[in-house]
Length: 242
Image (cartoon, rainbow, N blue to C red; front, top):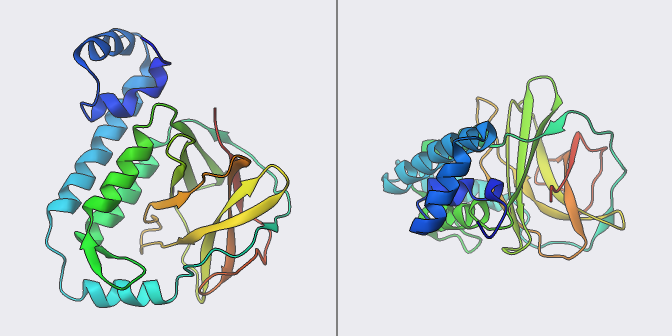
């Protein structure tokens, strides 16, 4: 196998490997419990995405998402510095968190609204998520910043993007969770607000992370609509694996 077999779980689950590479990966799978778990989790995630793409948007979806877009910052402000947070409990095993987050997309229906206010098919989100998860250099990091809260980030330098998801987030009254890309010099750039459903699961966030010095993500709690720079200490931070 020409590359680390541990990085091929997503491609295998999506039938994106060639016959020879698939056979070699299956030989590896017979002796690697962690890859078995990742393949199972990614297969569940892919199935959820597929069901979401096949559904008709429910009545009122456009109005609800338009309202969310209206309160989401679209232009990225200049980088700002973020205080260094404490870290604990970070490890591997992202698939269950991502599957739960994709389930939120299924619940919303088969459409999202882009920044121009037009409804587009959820297959674009599926394409972006799949592109990152199946990238040859995809690196997965997950953990629990506090009891009952799980977060996962998948990063691909080749794709220049990340996919972020979380479970167990508390409802915020008049405030929003905001995701940031952290950089080697301590600066941060905003990566979007984290929408959370009534069960505490986030909608997957797909964000640009093409900067060469991008090193991880952080999450803060900000005033409703987000901030141009962090106004609170981060509740979680993760360095990219790999």
